[in-house]
Length: 479
Ligand code: NAD
Image (cartoon, rainbow, N blue to C red; front, top):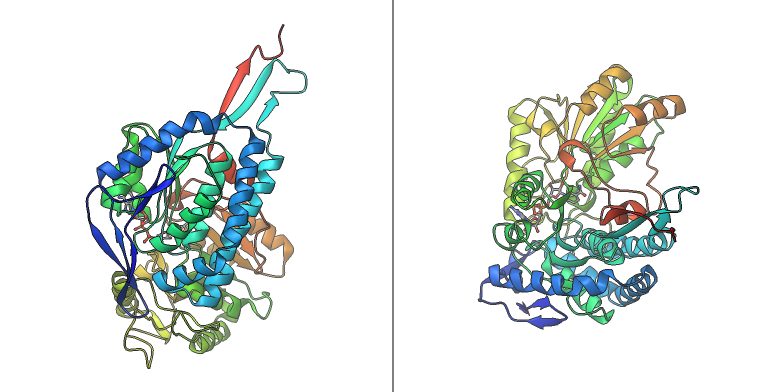
């Protein structure tokens, strides 16, 4: 079994202050694949102290020097993509093809986009052309705690580290205890990039331990968190005492509005998007809402599509889906599927239990419910598994009202060939992102939500903005 008990603090790998072993479970076999340490207050304090000591030097560097550092990180990342993909696939169950392309690939493109955004970023500029005496400076927030989840682990780590680093912050990363292995490879990448000691630190731990210690630490200036709404609330409360800046990327319950005039691939595209990464994406289009005249055909097509989704081991090549991350998630998903049945939704594909032929591993059957109403538990709660809810609507107004009737506001989706309608809906949907007709966002576009989905915007120049303070200096040009 892999021994990954050390932490990366002040530029070196160190033993934990106290031994507190935690086994990382491979969700495909249910066996331990590695052992890490869960940190204690002394480890958190050591990492924060290293970041604090490194801050004055790092924030005084020029943007050009920091961009050069990020370029070294990008180059080092490129040399470790295979290792990263294997680690992600083993620890959280993404099939190796998905891990290599989407999971690891996302990290690569975020780093590249931050390099481009940082080059174009106006770190210092006059307030206006005719007011050169007032200078606006963008500078580091300070010591940042970066707390990340397991579902798209390298995506989240790079979105936070890339932006924080190039903006001149120093940091302590606490990856999810479910998926620490890829983050530890990432620490090796940071080490290879030859940064000053203390700029980047990694401490493993759980939410109750290192997560809470970082969120309440007096020497941490900002917490950037991605994960559940539950933990986001706990972190906000812990951070309030010392008035830290808190940046949150939380859960979602995206609506996918399929109008009668949608293109012919719209339903299939929505089902496959839902099933991708075994449904473990905060931006999954989990509520498919279909216009009445197309409803019956859509339900039939969605069921047929889900029935064709293969489920299998992450180590096998192919476009199947893997297990969900752990036993807790597996049980939670089973309970929610049962709740859907009990509350009267019509099960048209999948259901409870493991898929045929898979008796071990946290595998879930790709599941589709029809005749879901928005008050049902499966329409309100984030399931975080391969489970799609289909609802019927009669009018555009009703569709918008139901789509917005959720505590969440991360991504909504619109499928329609009517451009005027699409523009109307893009303005009316209450979410940080609206994706139309399967067109993905351009490179460097912001990712983030509103309402219970959080308040941050990650990626590109918006991601850098989240990690800077704005300073107004007067008397700049005066004699
Ligand atoms: P989680 O909230 O349980 O854990 C996320 C991280 O927070 C982990 O590192 C965990 O150790 C830590 N943590 C947990 N409780 C904490 C606490 N009280 N204080 C400090 N840290 C704490 O979430 P998860 O199960 O790992 O991830 C799934 C969730 O993440 C889903 O709700 C999903 O929607 C959300 N997510 C959101 C986005 C986004 O950008 N909006 C992206 C990916 C995942």
